[in-house]
Each structure stands twice: as structure tokens, then as C-alpha cells.
Amino acid sequence: VVCLYRERSSGRPVAIKHISVQQMSREEREQSLNEARVLAMLHHPNIVACHHSFLEDDQSLAIVMEYAPGEPASWARGPWGHSPTPQQVLSFLGQIVLALEHVHSRQILHRDLKSQNLLLDRHRALVKVGDFGISKVLSSRSKAHSVSSLPLSLRGSWSRLRLPSLQLKSDIWALGCVLYELLTLRNPFEGS
Image (cartoon, rainbow, N blue to C red):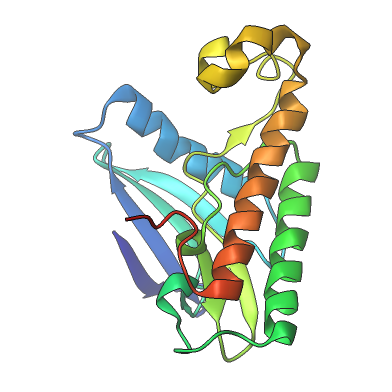
């Protein structure tokens, strides 16, 4: 649950994401804590900022984030009711690329880049990348990923792959899907 609050000390609006941890599996709890850790490492105008996080009575995790006015940029549903102009597409794409460049420069993979995880403030023509819940920090140990994380079609030649490069490319591929959605106002994976 995400709620809007006003911070007492500064008076600024903040969004607090409350995540109940008492019923979570260990993996789900780690995923929630991971989002807070990753967000705290990132400071960029096109990324939702994390101010701090804390556990509330061991029952829920609270992540205090920048309030990013706007709506999820689910372009398939068309917030304008029409296609964005070429200039808007370039502006939005450029902002997302700058955010991804910042994320990747910190050796972090988003791993869930999609229009639902992009917040669009139409009044300021500003895009912010959010939802880092399944992101991954690439350490020297995590660069040697297990074969099971690869698609079946790639497992046979896994030892010849450069996995960090492949993983960074997965965010870029997702960016291409977002671009498709921006240009067509259709989900790239709709089928009959």
C-alpha cells in the first residue's frame, strides 16, 4: 500500500510504501528490503528517490520515498487518448535512458522496466523510473549467475556468455518494449 503523507520536519509531501512482512516468505521479505536498499543508492532526477526506510514493529516495512506526482505511464491505455508527439516520445525515451544509464553505472539492473513502473507527470513532461523490487546489484560474486537463470535456449552454451553484459541488455530490451508501447499505444505482447 502506498500512501501520501506530509513530512513533519520539512513539510514536503512524501509517499510511504507500507509492505506487510509478517506473512511474507523469506524471499518476499528479502525482495522488499532489496527495493529499499537499491533505491537508497540511486540519486537521479528521473528515478523516484528513497529518503529512508524502517521496520514498523516487525510487522511492516515502510519505505519513505519522494512523492512523484503523476500516474503510471501505461501508454497502452493512452493517458492522452492519442499517440504522443514525436517530440514527447524523444523526451520520455531520453529521460528513461538517462535513468537507466545512472542505474547501470551503479552496477544495478532494474529487471522489471515496463510502462507500469514509470511515473509520468504530464504537466512537467517528466518521467520517473520506480519499483526496484526485483532489481539486482551486480557484485563480483553475482556476475557468475547460475545456469538456471538463463532461458532454456541459451543454457547449452552458458559458459561462453558474458552474463553481466547479457543482463544489462535485458533492461535495454525492456526499454525497446516501452518504446514500442509509446509509439503504438499497444502492449507489445498482446495476442489472440
